[in-house]
Picture 1 (cartoon, one colour):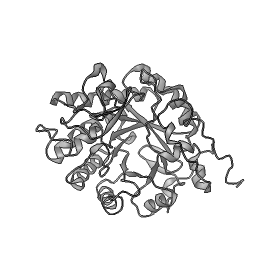
Picture 2: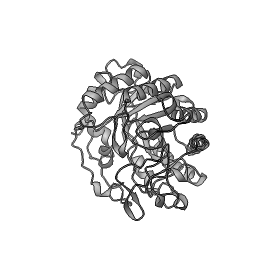
Picture 3: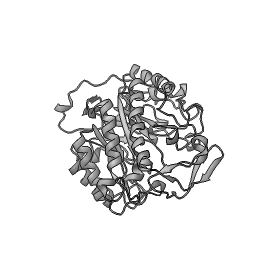
Picture 4: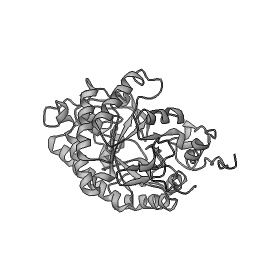
Length: 378
C-alpha cells in the first residue's frame, strides 16, 4: 500500500479524488470512501469474523473506510450473520479489525444501525416482532435462517421505547470507542429504523416523534446528540437517502423533510453528511437527485459525501460542480481491494461475483487479488 500523501488539503485549489481532505478531525490522504456494505460473515454471536480483519486491511488505502453496519441491540438486527456493537465481546472482536486497518495506515469508522421493520421474527430474540414507528410492513421478502420470507407487520414502538433506542445508540457508540474505531457513521438511510421515522410513508405516529418534519426528525437528532456526547461531533457522520425507494420507502415532500434534517445536522456540527443517491438509471437520478443535492449542499455546510454508483469521471464531475467533497464507492471495493490505485492509474476494474456477497467464507471476500502493477510500472 502506498504511503499517505502529506499535502495540506487547504492548499489544494481544484480537488480530485486523489487530493487530501479535512473531514471533521480527520486528515484524509484521498477523497475515496469505502461505503458500508453488509457481507453477512459474522459469527452466531454477532461478532465480526477473523477474516474481517484481512478484508478491511486489504482496503486500507481508501481515504476513509465505513464498516458494514453493526446493530445497536439484539432487536436491531435485520439479517442473519450481521455483526453487533452492543456487547464487550463484540467490541473485542472489532478491535482486531481496527488494529489491522491502522497497521496499514488506514482510518475506519463503524456504521451503527437499527433495522427496525426490515427484519423478521426469525431474526429477532425470542421470535419477537420487529419494531417500527408504525405497524406498516414493507413489501417483499427478507433473509432469514430459513431462506427468504415475506415481511411481517412490525410492532409500533411506545414513546418510552423510542427513548430507549437513543440509549442503545449511545451505548453502542461507547463500545465503538473501546473497539478502537476512529469515529461513527449513524445509519439513517435505506429504509432502516431512523429512516423509517424520518419519512411519512412509514411514520404515521401521533406522538412527539410523528407528524410534521420537526417531529419526525426528533429521533435522529436525539441519537446524533447522544453519540456526539461520546465521540464529539467532529468524529460523527450521518448517512441519509432522501430519494432511495428501497424497502418500500417514500415521503410526500422529501425536499422539506431532508432539508430540515440537513439544517439540524449542520447546527449539530457533524463531521459529514453521507447522501445515498438514487443511482444510475433510476428515474429520479438526474433531475430530482440533483435537486435534492442542491438543497442539502445549501443547508448543510460541512463535508458532503455522495454515494450512488459513480465511476471516476462522474465522481470528479460531482466534486468540480461542488455537489460533493468526497465520493463513496461500494461494490467496486468488493473485487478491487486496491481500488484507489486502480482508479488513479486507470487500471481495469475486476467485477465482483454477486453469488458470494453474502454466502460466508473467504471466497468473494478476501481472495480478490490486487492488480499487481504500480503506476510507475504501467
